[in-house]
Image 1 (spheres, chains in turn yellow, red):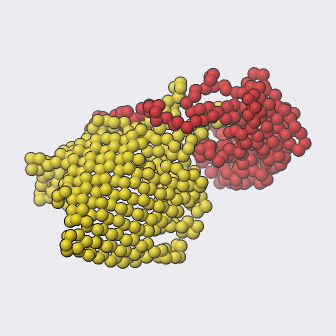
Image 2 (spheres, rainbow over the protein chains, first blue to last red; image 1 turned 180 degrees about the vertical axis):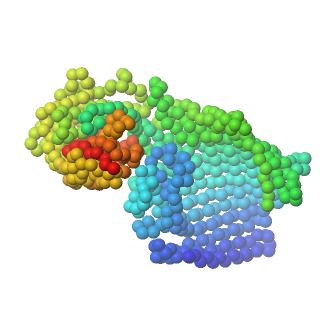
Image 3 (cartoon, rainbow over the protein chains, first blue to last red; image 1 turned 90 degrees about the horizontal axis):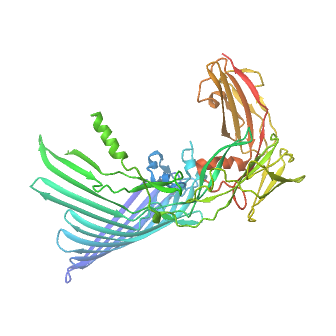
Length: 324
Length: 251
């Protein structure tokens, strides 16, 4: 059960055409499983130095009572959409609710009504993050003791220049997690992200759009050593066979190659029996860049080769969108 | 339409894998470690210790598939005895002894000193003797009956070896780890095939210690936290076997 109150207050400054906007909120959550109340205060301030230039800051404390725990072992399980098979976990008992504190500072500049630029820096602290081993994931009933409870933080700066349907953005970010005694880069810790979105209408009802995205490599836990794991027949006291098992290096200590791709889309708006429709042709990954989903060691070559399993190649599609 | 589906599948599969450039390889240093495997048992006439190295992930095996380490000193000791194992002449890296008398519930220590003086040590307590309680050897059972055995003190899990001879098949044999329980129904144990009247089952159970149980879990859980040796990787574990029984499936 939750209760939320908010107070928005604006102080105009008549001489400079500037002023404050203050936004204060308070959320009260009653958490029946933990039988306790949690208060989540938040405050936002926006100060207009000029009518076309503002500085914003915000602080908030947030609780989350339900979560999908991250998986501890193996980069394949950290990367693949295995969360499809995971269930949400209602927190309670020995597991405290996730909570986070956010600190945000932003500047905003308007060049015209349609064009503006923002630069936002942030710092976030996260507590009571949950992690579970892959082996325990599919247990019929997962006990609270099976989870590792950790914490983390993230900070960064994001720039966005937007003009109508076109925008360009860059983000620099760092995220760290601590599980047990180890600080590490989690699988989503992307250092640089760069995006361009260009959309342009032509011939009245046609639209052309291009998106290009670039992301520096995501971290994973690399394998640095290997040994022969013995397939032993305990009844015959004989060695039957062996296969390679691996020694993993520092958690999140290796990064995949950068991710980038370009998508192009052409669409035509039309009406069908009075309903707004659009037919489109879209090509995902136009230049067929082989982005890596996860990798494995191929020991059939000498020396062994690190092989990457790639994501979607060039992928054309056609469709009709109907707006109800 | 079918040909277009195949075309789409081909497009998806095209370029599913590609080698990753070496600058994206893990740069962390790894030094090879001793890799030792040994499971001892009162039922074994000859106890063995397999001595090998681990490798960097970028290394190939130096010569074929046999990579045993010769010239190591291998000693297994208990309160009552200390036995030096000798390398088998035709199997480099395999050390054996026929004079180590392994007894249930005794604690044994392994010490392996590699030619470059790297040392690996480990200990194991041999699980206690135990017997199958139900059914008795020669009984006729139904598929719904349950196999029951005594608890073996010091065991962390049990392995069940089961063989089946039927009119329409040749003798099938397999074994499975079932966890730390002392009973299991035949229908679950043979869930991969239905049992029919006249099937003859051969059963034997092994109680295994924590070290060997954890080693068996490595392929599904990874190496971290499942090695109980000092100075290397691998296992020094132990097991005790029950009596074996033969039962026939009745109507």
